[in-house]
Amino acid sequence: MNIECILAPNAGPMTGPGTNSWVVRSGNESVLIDPGPIIESHLDAIRQALHETTVRAVLVTHTHPDHAPAANPLAAEYGVPAIGNRPGPEFRPDRRIADGESVGFGALQAVCVETPGHTPESVSYRIRDALFVGDHIMGGSTVMVEDMGDYLNSLRKLQSIGLEALYPGHGPVIDAPEVVIAEYVAHRLEREDQILSALAGGAGSVGAIVSDIYRDVDPALHPAAAVSVVAHLAKLSRDGLVETAAEPSWDSAVRLR
Ligand SMILES: [Zn+2]
Image (cartoon, rainbow, N blue to C red; front, side, top):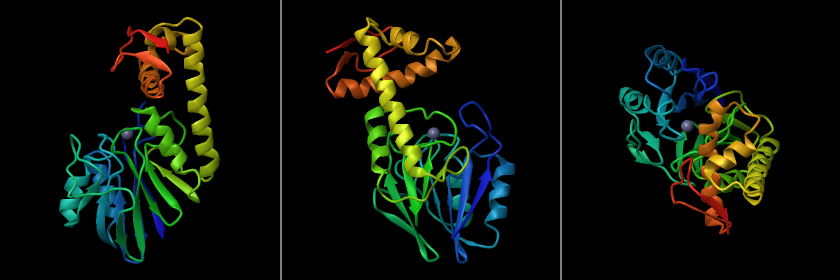
């Protein structure tokens, strides 16, 4: 197995150094994972990496605009299927893939591991003991989470499956998966505790919780922090621990049950 990263030139606050597009080869066959945004120089770099190999499929981890838009055009160009869990605004899967299903190339299989949380349709792909995780786990920055309950379950799901390395959608390769995943779980549980403590201490709205637990953080970042707090509240509400609106905003009331 040979793994090559092609870094897209889309660095930014949400993408770190840019999107990692991965070409994985086995013998003279390959798969392309997360081809990224449609930027002509990036597509050329991908074509270069695919030059002397037979592409079998284009896989996407999720449908965000920094991961999936180039999938359909490149798949069409190579005459192979674009594969993902669900369609999105800029992605139409030719084949939908679910937990345990696989795509063969050379002597290897890319096996789908459903890892919802960052988005509902987020999946990872396991090839031997390497896991291509998209934005489920990032090298060096905090993951935006839509559903914290799903997200924690997806982290725990990866804890005991014997992985050697994680290949994220942004940032460097992660060589100690179990350590990093345990840190991610601990970080989210610590945040959950802080939210419950803020509520116990009298915070009565999403905004009050954010202002309390992120008081040392630049207020310009508080709206982003609120997204994370809301994802936690959805989980805590399902767990029966808090009461809040179905889709809480900054001023929504929140209280302990
Ligand atoms: Zn994403």
